[in-house]
Length: 462
Image 1 (cartoon, one colour):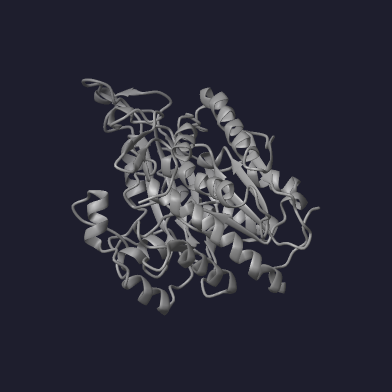
Image 2 (cartoon, one colour):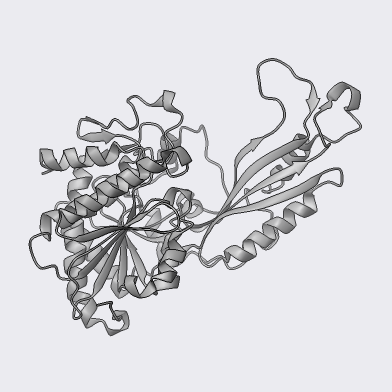
Protein backbone atom coordinates (compact mmCIF):
# COMPACT_ATOMS: atom_id res chain seq x y z
CA UNK A 1 0.00 0.00 0.00
CA UNK A 2 1.41 3.40 -0.93
CA UNK A 3 0.18 6.97 -1.23
CA UNK A 4 2.11 7.98 -4.32
CA UNK A 5 0.49 10.19 -6.93
CA UNK A 6 0.61 9.45 -10.64
CA UNK A 7 2.98 12.40 -11.08
CA UNK A 8 5.38 11.07 -8.43
CA UNK A 9 5.47 7.65 -10.06
CA UNK A 10 5.91 9.24 -13.49
CA UNK A 11 8.89 11.24 -12.22
CA UNK A 12 10.54 8.07 -10.92
CA UNK A 13 10.00 6.31 -14.25
CA UNK A 14 11.55 9.25 -16.10
CA UNK A 15 14.58 9.10 -13.80
CA UNK A 16 14.92 5.37 -14.49
CA UNK A 17 14.70 5.79 -18.25
CA UNK A 18 18.16 7.36 -18.48
CA UNK A 19 20.74 4.71 -19.40
CA UNK A 20 23.32 6.42 -17.19
CA UNK A 21 25.92 3.63 -17.20
CA UNK A 22 29.10 5.24 -15.91
CA UNK A 23 31.42 2.40 -16.86
CA UNK A 24 30.64 2.81 -20.59
CA UNK A 25 32.34 5.84 -22.23
CA UNK A 26 29.70 5.91 -24.96
CA UNK A 27 27.04 6.59 -22.30
CA UNK A 28 28.68 9.75 -20.98
CA UNK A 29 26.14 12.05 -22.63
CA UNK A 30 23.29 10.04 -21.14
CA UNK A 31 24.88 10.35 -17.71
CA UNK A 32 25.09 14.12 -18.14
CA UNK A 33 21.47 14.25 -19.30
CA UNK A 34 20.46 12.31 -16.20
CA UNK A 35 22.42 14.67 -13.96
CA UNK A 36 20.66 17.64 -15.56
CA UNK A 37 17.29 16.01 -14.89
CA UNK A 38 18.20 15.55 -11.22
CA UNK A 39 19.36 19.17 -10.99
CA UNK A 40 16.13 20.43 -12.52
CA UNK A 41 13.99 18.27 -10.25
CA UNK A 42 15.72 19.60 -7.14
CA UNK A 43 15.46 23.18 -8.40
CA UNK A 44 11.73 22.68 -8.87
CA UNK A 45 11.63 21.42 -5.27
CA UNK A 46 12.77 24.77 -3.90
CA UNK A 47 16.50 24.07 -3.66
CA UNK A 48 19.40 25.91 -5.20
CA UNK A 49 20.90 23.20 -7.47
CA UNK A 50 23.79 23.04 -9.89
CA UNK A 51 26.05 20.65 -11.77
CA UNK A 52 29.60 20.56 -10.46
CA UNK A 53 32.69 19.45 -12.32
CA UNK A 54 34.45 16.66 -10.41
CA UNK A 55 37.05 15.85 -13.05
CA UNK A 56 34.83 13.03 -14.30
CA UNK A 57 31.07 12.83 -14.60
CA UNK A 58 29.32 15.80 -12.98
CA UNK A 59 27.88 15.77 -9.48
CA UNK A 60 24.59 17.45 -8.60
CA UNK A 61 24.83 19.71 -5.55
CA UNK A 62 21.68 21.27 -4.10
CA UNK A 63 21.04 23.30 -0.94
CA UNK A 64 18.29 25.02 0.93
CA UNK A 65 18.80 28.48 2.42
CA UNK A 66 21.35 27.78 5.14
CA UNK A 67 21.07 29.25 8.61
CA UNK A 68 24.08 29.46 10.89
CA UNK A 69 22.14 28.31 13.96
CA UNK A 70 20.98 25.04 12.37
CA UNK A 71 22.87 21.75 11.98
CA UNK A 72 23.75 20.57 8.49
CA UNK A 73 22.78 17.22 6.97
CA UNK A 74 24.37 15.95 3.75
CA UNK A 75 22.18 13.55 1.75
CA UNK A 76 24.23 11.44 -0.65
CA UNK A 77 23.27 9.20 -3.55
CA UNK A 78 24.24 8.39 -7.12
CA UNK A 79 22.50 8.61 -10.48
CA UNK A 80 24.80 6.22 -12.34
CA UNK A 81 23.88 2.57 -12.73
CA UNK A 82 25.43 -0.78 -13.51
CA UNK A 83 25.60 -2.08 -17.09
CA UNK A 84 22.42 -3.82 -18.18
CA UNK A 85 24.02 -6.99 -19.52
CA UNK A 86 23.05 -9.78 -19.97
CA UNK A 87 20.17 -8.11 -21.80
CA UNK A 88 18.61 -11.39 -22.94
CA UNK A 89 17.76 -12.26 -19.33
CA UNK A 90 15.58 -9.17 -18.81
CA UNK A 91 11.83 -9.74 -18.96
CA UNK A 92 11.36 -6.12 -20.07
CA UNK A 93 13.80 -3.56 -21.55
CA UNK A 94 16.14 -2.41 -18.74
CA UNK A 95 15.71 1.31 -19.48
CA UNK A 96 12.01 1.19 -20.27
CA UNK A 97 10.61 1.04 -16.72
CA UNK A 98 7.62 -1.23 -16.21
CA UNK A 99 5.34 -1.31 -13.14
CA UNK A 100 3.81 -4.67 -12.23
CA UNK A 101 1.81 -5.24 -9.06
CA UNK A 102 3.32 -2.23 -7.32
CA UNK A 103 6.90 -3.07 -8.31
CA UNK A 104 8.92 -1.11 -10.87
CA UNK A 105 11.42 -3.04 -13.00
CA UNK A 106 14.42 -1.23 -14.52
CA UNK A 107 18.17 -1.00 -14.24
CA UNK A 108 18.95 1.29 -11.30
CA UNK A 109 15.47 0.85 -9.79
CA UNK A 110 16.97 0.03 -6.39
CA UNK A 111 20.64 0.86 -6.92
CA UNK A 112 20.45 3.76 -6.47
CA UNK A 113 17.80 5.74 -8.27
CA UNK A 114 14.77 4.50 -6.36
CA UNK A 115 16.49 4.98 -3.01
CA UNK A 116 17.90 8.47 -3.63
CA UNK A 117 14.62 9.50 -5.28
CA UNK A 118 12.88 8.68 -1.99
CA UNK A 119 14.91 11.49 -0.39
CA UNK A 120 14.40 13.83 -3.32
CA UNK A 121 10.66 13.24 -3.22
CA UNK A 122 10.65 13.42 0.58
CA UNK A 123 12.14 16.89 0.40
CA UNK A 124 9.62 17.99 -2.23
CA UNK A 125 6.69 16.60 -0.25
CA UNK A 126 7.51 17.89 3.20
CA UNK A 127 10.01 20.76 3.01
CA UNK A 128 9.80 22.49 -0.36
CA UNK A 129 7.33 25.07 0.94
CA UNK A 130 8.16 25.17 4.65
CA UNK A 131 11.15 26.06 6.76
CA UNK A 132 13.29 22.95 7.31
CA UNK A 133 14.69 22.06 10.76
CA UNK A 134 18.19 21.61 9.28
CA UNK A 135 20.47 22.92 6.58
CA UNK A 136 20.50 20.30 3.84
CA UNK A 137 23.01 19.51 1.12
CA UNK A 138 22.13 17.01 -1.59
CA UNK A 139 25.23 15.48 -3.19
CA UNK A 140 24.31 13.09 -6.00
CA UNK A 141 27.24 11.82 -8.04
CA UNK A 142 27.63 9.90 -11.29
CA UNK A 143 30.59 7.60 -10.66
CA UNK A 144 29.70 5.41 -7.67
CA UNK A 145 29.47 2.29 -9.80
CA UNK A 146 33.10 2.75 -10.89
CA UNK A 147 34.38 3.38 -7.35
CA UNK A 148 33.84 7.16 -7.05
CA UNK A 149 37.39 7.92 -8.25
CA UNK A 150 36.85 11.68 -8.39
CA UNK A 151 34.53 12.36 -5.47
CA UNK A 152 37.04 12.22 -2.62
CA UNK A 153 39.45 14.66 -4.34
CA UNK A 154 36.44 16.89 -5.11
CA UNK A 155 35.47 16.87 -1.42
CA UNK A 156 39.04 17.57 -0.34
CA UNK A 157 39.25 20.52 -2.70
CA UNK A 158 35.89 21.94 -1.55
CA UNK A 159 35.92 20.74 2.06
CA UNK A 160 34.61 23.91 3.71
CA UNK A 161 31.63 23.93 1.38
CA UNK A 162 30.55 20.42 2.40
CA UNK A 163 31.20 20.48 6.14
CA UNK A 164 28.25 18.84 7.87
CA UNK A 165 27.19 17.25 11.12
CA UNK A 166 26.07 13.95 9.62
CA UNK A 167 25.63 12.21 6.28
CA UNK A 168 22.45 10.32 5.33
CA UNK A 169 22.51 7.58 2.68
CA UNK A 170 19.97 5.09 1.40
CA UNK A 171 22.02 2.59 -0.60
CA UNK A 172 21.87 -0.49 1.61
CA UNK A 173 19.39 -3.25 2.44
CA UNK A 174 16.27 -3.86 4.47
CA UNK A 175 15.70 -7.17 6.20
CA UNK A 176 12.32 -7.40 4.48
CA UNK A 177 9.68 -4.99 3.20
CA UNK A 178 8.03 -4.68 6.62
CA UNK A 179 11.01 -4.33 8.94
CA UNK A 180 12.74 -0.94 9.42
CA UNK A 181 16.46 -1.57 9.14
CA UNK A 182 19.50 0.40 10.27
CA UNK A 183 22.87 -0.58 8.81
CA UNK A 184 25.70 0.32 11.17
CA UNK A 185 28.59 -1.43 9.46
CA UNK A 186 29.89 -1.97 5.92
CA UNK A 187 32.68 -4.11 4.61
CA UNK A 188 35.45 -2.37 2.71
CA UNK A 189 36.90 -3.54 -0.58
CA UNK A 190 40.23 -4.02 -2.33
CA UNK A 191 40.28 -5.16 -5.96
CA UNK A 192 43.08 -6.12 -8.30
CA UNK A 193 43.75 -7.74 -11.66
CA UNK A 194 46.55 -10.20 -12.26
CA UNK A 195 48.20 -11.34 -15.47
CA UNK A 196 50.38 -14.42 -15.65
CA UNK A 197 52.72 -14.40 -18.65
CA UNK A 198 54.14 -17.69 -19.92
CA UNK A 199 55.57 -17.95 -23.45
CA UNK A 200 55.85 -14.84 -25.56
CA UNK A 201 53.09 -16.12 -27.88
CA UNK A 202 50.49 -18.89 -28.03
CA UNK A 203 52.23 -22.23 -28.67
CA UNK A 204 51.18 -25.47 -30.35
CA UNK A 205 50.23 -27.75 -27.47
CA UNK A 206 51.39 -30.88 -29.28
CA UNK A 207 54.82 -29.56 -30.20
CA UNK A 208 55.55 -27.85 -26.88
CA UNK A 209 53.16 -29.51 -24.40
CA UNK A 210 55.02 -31.09 -21.51
CA UNK A 211 57.97 -28.74 -21.89
CA UNK A 212 56.31 -25.37 -21.32
CA UNK A 213 54.12 -24.55 -18.31
CA UNK A 214 50.58 -23.55 -19.22
CA UNK A 215 49.80 -20.17 -17.56
CA UNK A 216 46.13 -21.13 -17.10
CA UNK A 217 47.09 -24.22 -15.13
CA UNK A 218 49.58 -22.22 -13.07
CA UNK A 219 47.00 -19.52 -12.38
CA UNK A 220 44.41 -22.11 -11.37
CA UNK A 221 46.77 -23.49 -8.75
CA UNK A 222 47.56 -20.00 -7.45
CA UNK A 223 43.91 -19.10 -7.08
CA UNK A 224 43.01 -22.40 -5.47
CA UNK A 225 45.55 -21.58 -2.74
CA UNK A 226 43.57 -18.51 -1.62
CA UNK A 227 41.53 -20.61 0.83
CA UNK A 228 42.28 -23.58 3.06
CA UNK A 229 39.93 -26.54 3.46
CA UNK A 230 37.99 -24.78 6.25
CA UNK A 231 37.10 -21.81 4.04
CA UNK A 232 39.59 -19.54 5.78
CA UNK A 233 41.67 -17.17 3.61
CA UNK A 234 45.20 -18.57 3.58
CA UNK A 235 47.07 -15.31 2.96
CA UNK A 236 49.49 -14.62 5.86
CA UNK A 237 48.46 -11.49 7.76
CA UNK A 238 45.05 -11.35 6.07
CA UNK A 239 43.16 -11.31 9.37
CA UNK A 240 45.35 -8.68 11.05
CA UNK A 241 43.17 -6.02 12.67
CA UNK A 242 39.87 -7.87 12.20
CA UNK A 243 37.36 -6.60 14.74
CA UNK A 244 35.89 -9.30 16.96
CA UNK A 245 32.15 -9.82 16.75
CA UNK A 246 30.66 -8.70 20.05
CA UNK A 247 28.41 -10.95 22.10
CA UNK A 248 25.40 -8.68 21.74
CA UNK A 249 25.84 -8.73 17.96
CA UNK A 250 25.93 -12.51 17.79
CA UNK A 251 22.83 -12.73 19.95
CA UNK A 252 20.99 -10.05 17.96
CA UNK A 253 21.83 -11.53 14.56
CA UNK A 254 20.93 -15.05 15.66
CA UNK A 255 17.37 -13.88 16.28
CA UNK A 256 16.89 -12.46 12.79
CA UNK A 257 14.75 -14.48 10.35
CA UNK A 258 17.64 -14.87 7.91
CA UNK A 259 18.31 -18.59 7.80
CA UNK A 260 20.71 -20.65 5.73
CA UNK A 261 17.71 -22.02 3.85
CA UNK A 262 16.62 -18.47 3.02
CA UNK A 263 20.09 -17.57 1.72
CA UNK A 264 20.12 -20.74 -0.41
CA UNK A 265 16.71 -19.85 -1.78
CA UNK A 266 17.78 -16.31 -2.70
CA UNK A 267 21.07 -17.38 -4.30
CA UNK A 268 19.91 -20.58 -5.96
CA UNK A 269 22.87 -22.64 -4.74
CA UNK A 270 22.46 -26.27 -3.60
CA UNK A 271 24.51 -25.66 -0.44
CA UNK A 272 26.26 -22.81 1.34
CA UNK A 273 30.01 -22.57 1.83
CA UNK A 274 32.26 -20.43 3.98
CA UNK A 275 34.63 -20.04 6.88
CA UNK A 276 33.91 -22.68 9.50
CA UNK A 277 33.01 -21.60 13.02
CA UNK A 278 30.77 -18.71 11.95
CA UNK A 279 27.08 -18.38 11.13
CA UNK A 280 26.00 -17.34 7.66
CA UNK A 281 25.30 -13.76 8.77
CA UNK A 282 28.61 -13.52 10.61
CA UNK A 283 30.39 -14.63 7.45
CA UNK A 284 28.62 -11.99 5.36
CA UNK A 285 28.63 -9.09 7.82
CA UNK A 286 31.67 -9.50 10.05
CA UNK A 287 34.30 -11.63 8.31
CA UNK A 288 36.65 -10.66 5.45
CA UNK A 289 36.59 -12.59 2.19
CA UNK A 290 38.60 -13.32 -0.94
CA UNK A 291 36.82 -13.84 -4.26
CA UNK A 292 37.78 -14.59 -7.85
CA UNK A 293 35.49 -12.33 -9.92
CA UNK A 294 36.66 -13.49 -13.32
CA UNK A 295 39.29 -15.67 -14.97
CA UNK A 296 40.18 -15.92 -18.65
CA UNK A 297 42.82 -16.76 -21.21
CA UNK A 298 43.53 -18.96 -24.20
CA UNK A 299 40.99 -19.99 -26.81
CA UNK A 300 37.29 -19.93 -25.92
CA UNK A 301 35.68 -19.94 -29.37
CA UNK A 302 33.79 -22.64 -31.18
CA UNK A 303 35.54 -25.96 -31.69
CA UNK A 304 39.09 -26.91 -30.77
CA UNK A 305 42.29 -24.92 -30.91
CA UNK A 306 45.16 -26.85 -29.35
CA UNK A 307 47.40 -24.21 -27.80
CA UNK A 308 49.34 -23.35 -24.70
CA UNK A 309 48.15 -19.78 -24.18
CA UNK A 310 50.67 -17.01 -23.70
CA UNK A 311 48.79 -15.38 -20.83
CA UNK A 312 46.18 -16.04 -18.17
CA UNK A 313 44.20 -13.37 -16.33
CA UNK A 314 42.03 -13.03 -13.27
CA UNK A 315 40.20 -10.32 -11.37
CA UNK A 316 40.14 -10.61 -7.58
CA UNK A 317 38.34 -8.70 -4.87
CA UNK A 318 38.68 -8.77 -1.11
CA UNK A 319 36.03 -7.59 1.35
CA UNK A 320 37.41 -6.02 4.51
CA UNK A 321 35.87 -5.59 7.94
CA UNK A 322 36.68 -3.14 10.74
CA UNK A 323 39.49 -2.60 11.59
CA UNK A 324 41.49 -3.93 8.65
CA UNK A 325 43.87 -1.63 6.78
CA UNK A 326 43.44 -1.74 2.97
CA UNK A 327 47.05 -0.72 2.27
CA UNK A 328 48.44 -3.50 4.45
CA UNK A 329 46.04 -6.00 2.91
CA UNK A 330 47.08 -5.04 -0.64
CA UNK A 331 50.71 -5.64 0.29
CA UNK A 332 49.93 -8.99 1.93
CA UNK A 333 48.00 -10.19 -1.12
CA UNK A 334 50.74 -9.12 -3.52
CA UNK A 335 53.45 -10.82 -1.47
CA UNK A 336 51.36 -14.01 -1.35
CA UNK A 337 50.79 -14.10 -5.09
CA UNK A 338 54.40 -13.37 -5.99
CA UNK A 339 55.54 -16.21 -3.71
CA UNK A 340 53.13 -18.58 -5.46
CA UNK A 341 54.13 -17.55 -8.98
CA UNK A 342 56.18 -20.39 -10.53
CA UNK A 343 59.60 -19.56 -12.06
CA UNK A 344 58.28 -20.48 -15.51
CA UNK A 345 55.88 -17.51 -15.51
CA UNK A 346 55.99 -13.77 -14.93
CA UNK A 347 53.35 -12.11 -12.75
CA UNK A 348 51.92 -8.60 -13.16
CA UNK A 349 49.50 -7.15 -10.58
CA UNK A 350 47.36 -4.08 -11.22
CA UNK A 351 45.67 -2.52 -8.19
CA UNK A 352 42.07 -1.41 -8.59
CA UNK A 353 39.24 -0.10 -6.46
CA UNK A 354 39.88 0.33 -2.75
CA UNK A 355 37.62 1.43 0.10
CA UNK A 356 37.83 1.21 3.87
CA UNK A 357 35.27 -0.59 6.02
CA UNK A 358 32.84 1.50 8.09
CA UNK A 359 31.38 1.16 11.57
CA UNK A 360 29.09 3.31 13.72
CA UNK A 361 28.17 2.10 17.19
CA UNK A 362 24.36 1.78 17.01
CA UNK A 363 24.19 2.40 20.76
CA UNK A 364 25.67 5.89 20.30
CA UNK A 365 23.53 9.04 20.28
CA UNK A 366 23.50 9.10 16.48
CA UNK A 367 22.58 5.44 16.36
CA UNK A 368 19.65 6.03 18.70
CA UNK A 369 18.42 8.92 16.53
CA UNK A 370 18.54 6.64 13.48
CA UNK A 371 16.46 3.97 15.21
CA UNK A 372 13.93 6.55 16.38
CA UNK A 373 13.55 7.92 12.85
CA UNK A 374 12.95 4.44 11.47
CA UNK A 375 10.37 3.72 14.15
CA UNK A 376 8.53 6.96 13.48
CA UNK A 377 8.50 6.57 9.69
CA UNK A 378 7.33 2.96 9.79
CA UNK A 379 4.49 3.52 12.25
CA UNK A 380 3.22 1.54 15.18
CA UNK A 381 2.09 -1.47 13.14
CA UNK A 382 5.60 -2.29 11.94
CA UNK A 383 8.13 -4.42 13.85
CA UNK A 384 10.81 -2.80 15.98
CA UNK A 385 13.77 -1.62 13.83
CA UNK A 386 16.60 -4.12 13.50
CA UNK A 387 20.34 -3.45 13.55
CA UNK A 388 22.43 -5.07 10.85
CA UNK A 389 25.75 -4.85 9.08
CA UNK A 390 26.13 -5.37 5.36
CA UNK A 391 28.57 -7.36 3.30
CA UNK A 392 28.69 -4.80 0.51
CA UNK A 393 30.82 -1.69 0.30
CA UNK A 394 30.11 2.03 -0.10
CA UNK A 395 33.70 3.34 -0.24
CA UNK A 396 32.74 7.01 -0.13
CA UNK A 397 31.37 6.55 3.41
CA UNK A 398 34.88 6.23 4.78
CA UNK A 399 35.91 9.31 2.78
CA UNK A 400 33.07 11.33 4.32
CA UNK A 401 34.47 10.52 7.73
CA UNK A 402 38.09 11.11 6.72
CA UNK A 403 37.56 14.37 4.81
CA UNK A 404 34.53 15.91 6.53
CA UNK A 405 34.81 14.30 9.96
CA UNK A 406 31.16 13.24 9.68
CA UNK A 407 29.56 9.91 10.48
CA UNK A 408 27.02 8.37 8.12
CA UNK A 409 23.54 7.00 8.85
CA UNK A 410 22.63 4.19 6.45
CA UNK A 411 18.91 3.66 5.86
CA UNK A 412 18.52 0.90 3.30
CA UNK A 413 15.44 0.55 1.10
CA UNK A 414 16.72 -2.43 -0.92
CA UNK A 415 15.19 -5.87 -0.49
CA UNK A 416 16.99 -9.23 -0.75
CA UNK A 417 15.03 -10.03 -3.91
CA UNK A 418 15.48 -6.63 -5.60
CA UNK A 419 18.09 -8.15 -7.97
CA UNK A 420 20.65 -5.37 -7.58
CA UNK A 421 23.33 -5.62 -10.29
CA UNK A 422 21.32 -8.40 -11.95
CA UNK A 423 18.71 -8.64 -14.72
CA UNK A 424 15.18 -7.65 -13.71
CA UNK A 425 16.33 -5.25 -10.99
CA UNK A 426 13.25 -3.95 -9.19
CA UNK A 427 11.97 -1.58 -6.49
CA UNK A 428 8.71 -1.62 -4.57
CA UNK A 429 6.74 1.58 -4.79
CA UNK A 430 5.57 1.11 -1.19
CA UNK A 431 9.20 1.56 -0.13
CA UNK A 432 9.44 4.80 -2.09
CA UNK A 433 6.49 6.09 -0.09
CA UNK A 434 8.06 4.84 3.16
CA UNK A 435 11.39 6.42 2.19
CA UNK A 436 9.80 9.87 1.89
CA UNK A 437 8.47 9.58 5.45
CA UNK A 438 11.86 8.42 6.63
CA UNK A 439 13.46 11.48 5.02
CA UNK A 440 11.10 13.73 6.93
CA UNK A 441 11.60 11.88 10.24
CA UNK A 442 15.38 11.86 10.15
CA UNK A 443 15.66 15.55 9.28
CA UNK A 444 13.20 16.50 12.00
CA UNK A 445 14.92 14.40 14.67
CA UNK A 446 18.41 15.53 13.68
CA UNK A 447 17.17 19.11 13.87
CA UNK A 448 16.09 18.47 17.44
CA UNK A 449 19.11 16.51 18.62
CA UNK A 450 22.19 17.88 16.90
CA UNK A 451 22.16 21.44 18.34
CA UNK A 452 21.95 19.97 21.84
CA UNK A 453 24.87 17.59 21.26
CA UNK A 454 28.07 19.65 21.47
CA UNK A 455 30.39 16.86 20.31
CA UNK A 456 28.53 16.75 17.00
CA UNK A 457 28.40 20.50 16.45
CA UNK A 458 30.54 21.78 13.58
CA UNK A 459 31.11 25.05 11.80
CA UNK A 460 29.02 25.59 8.69
CA UNK A 461 29.63 27.49 5.48
CA UNK A 462 27.61 30.65 5.19
